Length: 371
Image: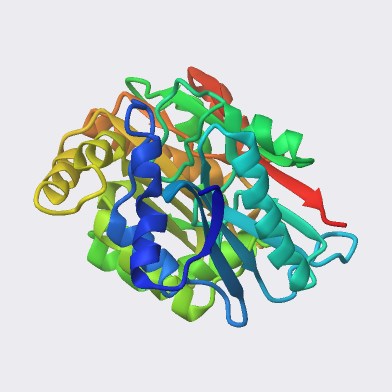
């Protein structure tokens, strides 16, 4: 029957699109199946800034799914040269170069029809979607916020003419038996010098700062490669998605003497094993695995950290690290994953020198200039 490109238009086709990786990674011990509901909510209707467009494609050979890709056109996204930029994400394919070539040809044709001159990815609708293709660390467990892919993925992309746009690196560090004294001393000094404090109490006390967190993310991440500002609708959707997973002790919020949020750090217990055991299904047992992982875990993932512009380079990161590190120690956390951070983010990376760490993963956003 040959190769067939399917544009996803119906709900049944979207189900096939979401479920395709389940067969591709069936025998892979590192890949983590995302919860179907999370993928569905992200893709239907797709969550992104106003005015964006998205195309989902499946490629089939003899009626069998062999690959998928999402192509995203965000309004007014341009590179430093002013060229219109498009994105690809949710990219998976069998180890067959001709099929992959046909899949990308269809994606690139649509992108060009939208006036896009540069296509890059993997990227999603926002920076809270999974970003960047794994190029080092194929025998390391990913976090639930990371892409896992086979080693042939980047090889095929390079063969198709895609090149490095930027790399993201990942660290794993060991939690010490006590917070380093230099970190504690610096945290105390910062509190006194800049009249800042941590938000105490329960998550109920921290929840009102939810939208302030996204406002601060918009400020602190605006110069990060490919960042898309969060509007109110997007912020609410991500709050609804992630707030139920939060552990109060692992949410560190710093406010000034006017009760204004000036810094944030958010970590979560590792849900890698819980998601893997759930096999992409929240019910009947997925929810139980997640709750168990939240209550009993010796590993955590650091998700977000940021400081307001006017407080940058004043040591507030040390205050956040001291707060979260103390929580790790209390909760018996032994190891922490940093999650992907830009290779150029020296401010955060400078903190790792205080701990026993290793850089164990590297991910890449690829780009191609379309002719």
